[in-house]
Image (cartoon, rainbow, N blue to C red; front, side, top):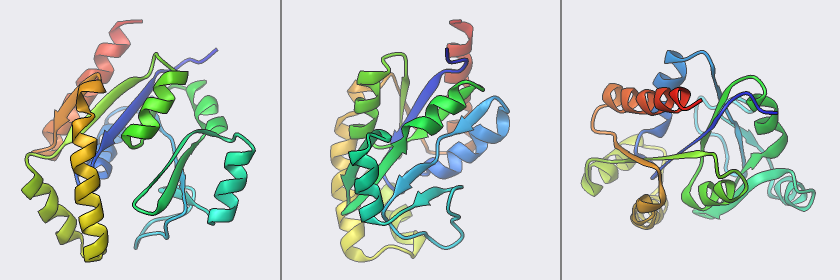
Length: 187
């Protein structure tokens, strides 16, 4: 029997999910972060097993065949997935945060209707584009793909339990912490 609750955080690439989630995780010691597997190469400073499990496409496909993912998705020409066993193990210890895209979020929700879905939106598409371009680690083709994907993702927000705007990191993190606290009160 799981002890914790599952929280799914989604948002377009460049919306600041990682920055917001680092503040959320630092504020509550009962939160565990689910590390996703991906076929994309690590960005500077990212560590295998911490930011992602960086795997080959062949390994990822063998994990799909073995039903090792709670969910998986392909977007921007890259595979991403949530290892099932890791989530189940972490739920025994406390609340678990998944940072996944809408397709994956809805797949998890079908299996775990008790999951809380939170979508982080940018203040505007212009702000999102500026954030993507300012990273300096993404080529023009990828930026255009991510902006196109972001439009579709934001159309999915009515299917989420909560939508939070990241116009200021601390305020955004506080809103998410408030949602988690609300769910604690529902016990």
